[in-house]
Image 1 (cartoon, rainbow, N blue to C red):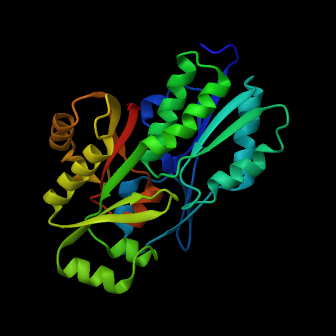
Image 2 (cartoon, one colour):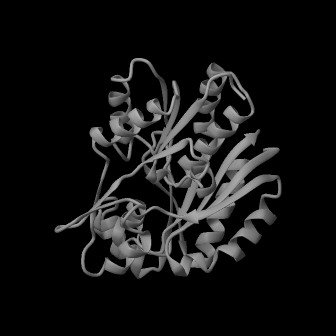
Length: 288
């Protein structure tokens, strides 16, 4: 273990595996899901399924947490005796959370708060937080951990199979013409984050099964000849969850040099933009 205790701070959009959140020294900054008449806290008083069940009535908006909420969480971490904090957030190209944490952190002069812009979303960001935790557990030096995490941003990726373009279009993430044409042709886009950390459509495949397989193929291509990696499957809603076992078997067959495979539901905030049925294939290279 490192000499000083290290705390971890992540946002709910990073979909960090539950087993790591449960360890106690990892706090979650919750994003907000906002309806016309009410506001919810991501993964606290609303689930992704709740969002999907109401999409026909209203598509909510999402928002980053207030500086006050982030300040309260950092104050709690400080009160627990931590002087070092590693914060991993979803891409600054998709959310203002990373910048907000940096600004609030300036008020905590007695703490060394290292903030990582994952350039990713969902489990693509969460896998970097997993690495951060493991580096600390393995006793790496503070400066070494910081250097390695910046490298890990380039070694982590998630590829999302999106069953419909409707919600991306309504959220302003894709044009109306592309949405109508894609749905008419039964095209299922595969979305990732590019080097700048913004959404990028990397493929359009006809049919859901082929689209999920293409996401696995893209993860395999990203891994190239890596000796070891962590894998993850993220899903949106009951229908997608029912496919996880089959997808896991195929993913592990195609990428056999995995150390761990994580599974979990996407956050409600991400579900707002993608709708139900989402499947994400995440990969984080441990040994190139």
